[in-house]
Length: 356
Ligand code: CO
Image (cartoon, rainbow, N blue to C red; front, side, top):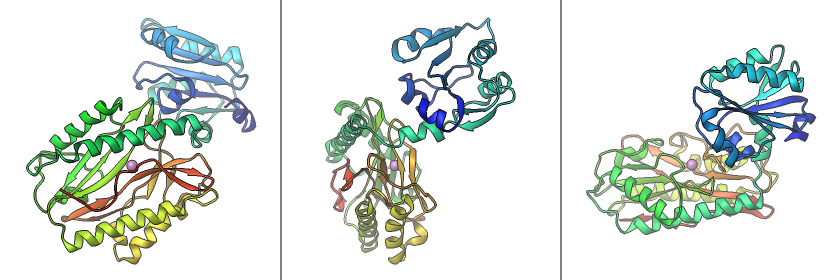
């Protein structure tokens, strides 16, 4: 990161608890009201300022050069000012974690008078967007374990079970197969709920004639999986079969379009144009995909407006969907990695129309 910072003229980068901090230092925690940040200087030093109650954990898990701990009787702003003075960080440009809480950013603004602030994602994102072979290895296992968890519970899904019961069963199975935690709130949307793309799960029992969107993933060694399959309870209607096949074909077209040099918007277009040609364009109401890594949503985003050019090592979802309000929805999602020869799929659970 130091060479990127120097190239782009940054004096320092300041990260608060976030996927960026975890990626850069190995320290993983939630943001809170107590000031906690790592300052990366252009002279290649990493200084942590942490509340005393985090000190031990940071020492054990993070990589850094210096650690300054403060207790609740002290003001962390003074430590921050000391670092600014010692490393001569006044003036110029500083990159700051995009998701930092304002109460922390306010202290930084005061300590760094006369400085212009830019989002750190511009810098760290460049490093994170292309995965190393080791990272791809972890994403691959996370994907395989998600496939396995769904396969293991499929026969146990029965009419009359509620969405929440299925969600609980799937999340329990994810742990059993070796995923440490869900990477996001599992979605089990049945019947008309399947037409709500970001519905989670509720007390509705699944019944004959329901489409069921199952969108879930888990974390393996810090790396996320995310996949979606849509199941049908009973004998599918002609309309469902048509919509299902349209989504399946659109997803395949987008996967087939993946190769280095294509733009993310062209991948989105491959799925969107097919869905539109079948008359369902207005019912595909979200982007085609999102990057994935230590966070379940990160760069690159696969959307109509994205100008990102795909490079080998990028990992993202391809998840077109069609949502008929009040009726049902269908979404199919796999994670792919860009390789020199095209897309490598990290999910291999069947995409044949599955009924229960
Ligand atoms: Co997704």
